[in-house]
Length: 507
Image (cartoon, one colour):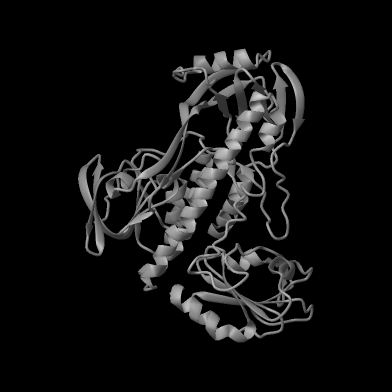
């Protein structure tokens, strides 16, 4: 194992999707960090498998969206059965048609595959993961936190200016920080889950069985693998569910499906899943912060869990970097203020969706069960921070949309997301105003409908999509945060005020 440094700026505990996203964010900003993972090797359990449109926009910014799209699949249809009889086959989840403002559909890709993409990107950015490293103690010490780390070579200490617990639902960091989880356990919602190999079924669709007596059974082909995700709800009248096993999964399939010629050959992961709906009292104690499942756990209905954690990390990364570079310490307070309400909303929404799905299943209405899982709210595109201290004025706080344009100098296609990609802030100048000189860390572009416009940092809104997306009709400045949210919208004449807002938080 590589030696663990004794000092660093940020110590990240947990190398799942949340921790990896944060590490990539810090690495591309030149922030010193150490990423520790208790396990000796990466997890291979599928767990999550939905990459939502907003998370794909994060992947775009990190430079990995093409890999996700290449390895994942979109619009996988659902084939519904009554035992061995096929009832219907159709794409029954939310419409994933891209638009100029939101270019990415939901993508099906298992968590291990997505984590591998993030690990590869982290390696490209010069980051490493310290496997087999378990944190057993955390101690605040003035302006640092000292962590005790157990490894195969013995006990080590790491001193960090900040510690982020991204170590999952059973977070050691959360426990050591004394932060409580509060919520409920949905005792009537228990599931057998697993990654299995199946013969005799088409991998072109999900296979779904629902019944009043047994509940829901799903076999979902995991893209880029030869595995299927097995999901079977456990009837509420089973007081103590049987431990998961390959033989049990075969019996469940035989009882609920009984499709001739289909066999479950072996399993790589088996799990008994009990649903908890809990939220951390706080996301921060001093210099210790939580992100992802360490801060919130909820129903998988709607496919928002992994995505919420990734977006936690995306929100936190640029703020830690700015703080370490001299920004106002109050900037870090906005992390919990912005992200905890999002988690609260996801907990409530996913619980309601699960109830809807199970009620439809009890009524033996498989179509309604599927259609209740996703809609425009699960995409993450509607998340906004309207009441944040970083949001200034009407029209600010929401996500900065994309739009296709043309580079005025080269004539080549360019998207607004291309202008925003990277660790910087972005200032869009709509209308006739000239592009101003701006400080380091802020990139300014003129967006105009004038087809004859020229000049550096000028893009032509050829089809009007950019002006439509921003509902901009005149000379206006739009200040966009590094995580793709609108910090301010002001008339072009208010440039000094806009630059002052940037200088406060964009150091």
